[in-house]
Length: 554
Picture 1 (cartoon, helix red, strand yellow):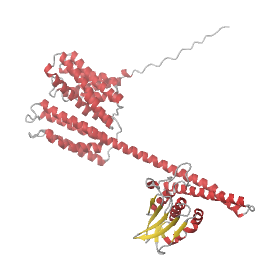
Picture 2: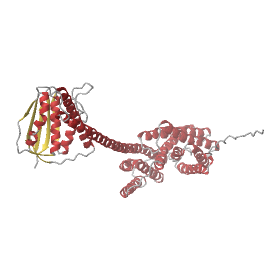
Picture 3: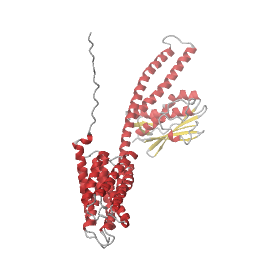
Picture 4: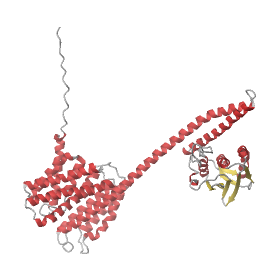
């Protein structure tokens, strides 16, 4: 018998994706290198100290933004750009390589510190992001490039020992200002959503741009008097930069700052005034220092405004979610209350039939048991009615129909409804009547529910042999209906909470008084819906006075 041996080949491992060898990658490297060289050549033409340290150094911002946006894999573009720029400036190959290494490390370390240490957001819409950029990228990582660059120049004999400090300071200031001005502008425009401005906002943006350009030209380009130089009038920019930050956020702030800085540098170089600053280097140092402080200030302002707007949006969304949840809760409570009320009505009906003897006579014990069932059913139904009313109020489904209501007639009818509770608690009820012509503007059904809720609370919380008094008095165009009792009262620290839904004066599993704590909450909502108000005054141990304030009917 021949046996055929089956040989199965193992699946080939997937080939790694050579992302670093794609044409697009080389295109990005080349683009970064070209931008770096052009920006570096422009900066080095502006009074470079020792030929290589410039106070105006945009390449730092370009390099930092490139690494933050594209990742550390783009570092060759920075190295090549820095190397070529320094070769074209006349640096020996070893010096150009050393400076390029420092420039590359500056960008890579700065980006690493921002993304790994602080959770940096490229939109710069948070104070933490802006402060991290200022401290980690602009102040600290730029020291790497300045230190390595000056050391390379010193080893090659291109800078004397006497000029080391001045060269290092110039190098560091130029890099720091580049990180503060150029990098934010690239980051905020390359990141985040692109929102379209309305025509009115476009007009406002145009007016702001013209104002920034005009003010910059007047201060830095027009002839300058020796009264403090252009920076003596720098306060003119602050309203404009604040306008940009407040109305257009971080993009407005960084764009306006970059425009001012560019015009300031050009104006300082072309129209430098020996009367105010003896050398171009000192003029540029003063201008760049001012622009660095302004950039940091308005970056912080823009971030603060962005955080405020984000917090307001989050608060608005949370409010919408809470409102939706509240509506869902109210609808659920309404449905459940309705479903519970249906079987309770059946229980009440059958209990009533039993008490009437329809199915035969009951002995005393049976009659007492059925009466207890009926009493508890009424109590449970009252609780469900409270929950149902509260749910309808929460859902905005309680219609209020104000009309003229005779106060005396309404209050006269209450005693018959209250008598069982008053007798059960052995309470004295005092109602001496009122002016029969007194009318209030109210919904009669809602007014009766308010009165029954308030008087029901008075009966519930007043000990046996206590007193409950009802009065109604007119004061101007208002009518005050007062319910006073000699009950247990309310503690001062809790009296402000009595209108909160589900609030209980006494809590705990052994609480003495029944109820769900909705009566006063519902009553106040009804009163306010009718243009009235309810107030509670109390002395612990002596009782409460509840005042229902309503408008007099025309």
